[in-house]
Length: 377
Image (tube, rainbow, N blue to C red):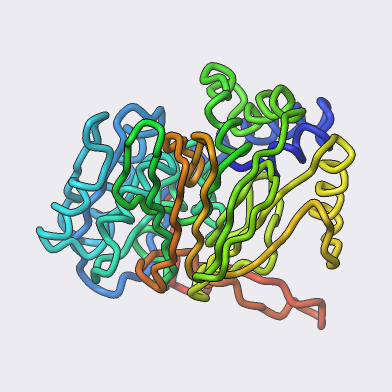
């Protein structure tokens, strides 16, 4: 979750629309729970491992569905590795790779996905996703059905494979003397307001209404002051700007279907850097209008660049975030892209199928064509 979405939700979503969306989500979850596992044609035997966050509500169901799907395909039971607070997924995924897993399924939130991906970077093992969190940013950007666990299992085991970029961030805090090793991200990170809102979001509200809870913190923190930051892209001379937030994105789509950075591509070897500098509510409304209407021209309150490396420094410790998780405070941040580092499983692209009587073509998932999919009664 990031500042642009928080602002848009705060300013543009009415209470009635939010209630309707929540009712729709609950109904979809109920319908999805009644569906059977889809067995698609498998290319051959696979060694499957799952790194699962056991505290997630859907974790037990995810384990059962994954085991059933492996049995249907005629494979060995999946190797199950649980995360802990002290070990959130990296070590488990690395062990799975050492044991020869062909696919390592990350079953949890964005934090679990990020840790598993960090272990799988530049290895032949593929990453599968079972989205059990609140944001599920990578899953949404891949078009994964985040409300249909059975379909997510099918994609993790039988989906098409593609390589995507990864980003890494290294940060230091000159005030406390703390420095961190490189942390990976797959969707986007940021420094400033977006991280502040994440840190201020109430956990109890997030459990009740999901990602819409972030808008409450956004309303409280929106009327703040800009911070002076120094920004350098690809080694260029740094520029000093007064900003509210700087985002560095590998992918640009946010929850609620908002395509914040339509030009962002997950496999172009570049980061999309967005500098937001509104000084007032009018500036935020201006920025929100640009995003919603997809206004193509530049605005003074937002600046968009592309780069392979980004270096940011700020005079006082400022909060940072990666893929929706707060990652501490920093006075300097270095971000770089790792091109095509990660092999992932994603849904098969839809392809057109002619309708009878010369009607318009309709897109249908490839797995539903012919005998490629079998639903169990």
